[in-house]
Length: 279
Image (tube, rainbow, N blue to C red; front, side):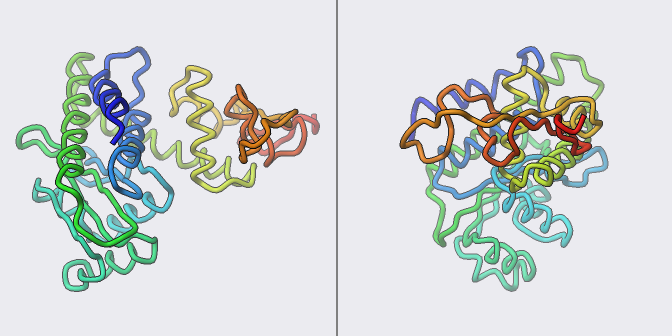
């Protein structure tokens, strides 16, 4: 395990008072770092809305996001059991869960996952969501991974509650509802980017997220502007490629340039799907 990255992750999970704190980006960081630090293939995160209903707010991959949605649509799966009980839920082999999760188990296997560990996001008795860890191969999760995963989920929960308290928000529900609303807009922007640029959903989200960071914008703000057509994501052909890097990128490329290979030369893409050379 990368000790330096682990330390950096805990620092970032507690640093919620930075200017322009973006709760969606914060939660995506939690799922991404779970995959980087733990012996897992993917991670997803569900939070409760003001009515107590779980919603998907972050995932490390599109496959994990769709599987989390499947849980909610079928009212069945480890993340729901974890949230309702406030306790960790696991399955070392999803082939053996026919009685427990007759619909979720086969769906997870079809998605390429064979084992799952769900960890509650809680502060004392207050459970606000759950972090789902997926692994491609069967077998029990390492105790060390479970401890670190739970610690990250706990620190993230404290960070969310602390940020709400320090900013004197009316309620945690208000903050979570804002995050859920932002999630909807981000999904719309991902879909439009994927369609316009010929990307898959994971690539579209990375382009959107990297562009927001490079321009010092909230992820939700850039997504809304792109959906409204008031902002564009530009890309131009990358010139000389860095030899041997295998991904067609040049050192120092902007996030938009990193996906230039998917675009016509010198195009400018907005949610309306118009190219700059059409004007």
